[in-house]
Length: 337
Image 1: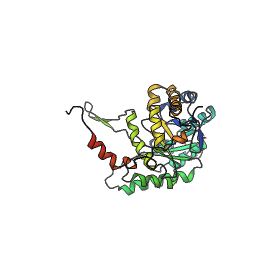
Image 2 (image 1 turned 90 degrees about the horizontal axis):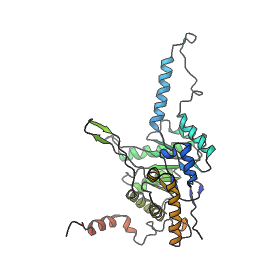
Image 3 (image 1 turned 60 degrees about the vertical axis):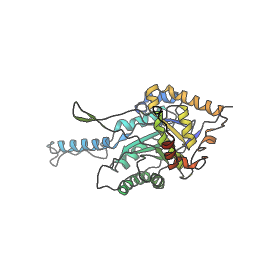
Image 4 (image 1 turned 30 degrees about the horizontal axis):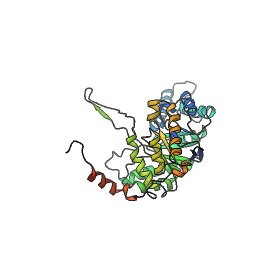
């Protein structure tokens, strides 16, 4: 008898715990259809960036200013009715509407930014367009020397609270691991309204072009090695916070999925592997996961989940300093006799 792969995430029962996360593959109806056909139990759409929202507002302001006074019939200037003039990223909202019409799986919208700005407004628009849930992808670089750690945490929490207060759909928060007391910050995010924590946001570091003498964007796809950070923290927090966990970064193989489920993840999210191998790789991952569960006598994903979390692990200290010390003291370089 095959193992039960079902899991729950953001109020939905999913056929299995491997979800395509935000990427170019989730940005068109054609590719979304392919992902659903390959077995995607839900999808996270690409992020609508705060900068796009700001750009749209600036474009409207420029339009209003350029038209002001240009119509003789309107001595006071011509101003379009703002409540009927759509200043939002129409294409993104149409993608949600089309996805809801064409697909039969939960559609998770995504907002990426760092300040309140138009987030609350656009969170409502995303809900109104039909999204089943929202992923808030917070990207803050603490580059201002005058900002304290407390200032940054407050910025995160106020943003989550503001969005959560205005929407009625489930809210997941994709976070950075770079907090001095991450476990406490995770608890505060849950208290602020996060129904799930997505761990973690990958920060793409810029590079220098020494020929052009400029700063250039840099993007490297994840590898399975990247899963160790979410693996550790999900294992630490499982059973301690009343929330759900989505693991992202480094999910390439069924073995990666199994490890994250053992840590306590409710779902695992993959991007790089699907970009590299195509939507069909999702089908392979699901089949391999089912095979592993059957071969190892697990009847369900639920039975597996959290088995190696800190609260259940034979050696709970392995997640803290003990592992750090052991790794350093037992390492032997192959080049040293």
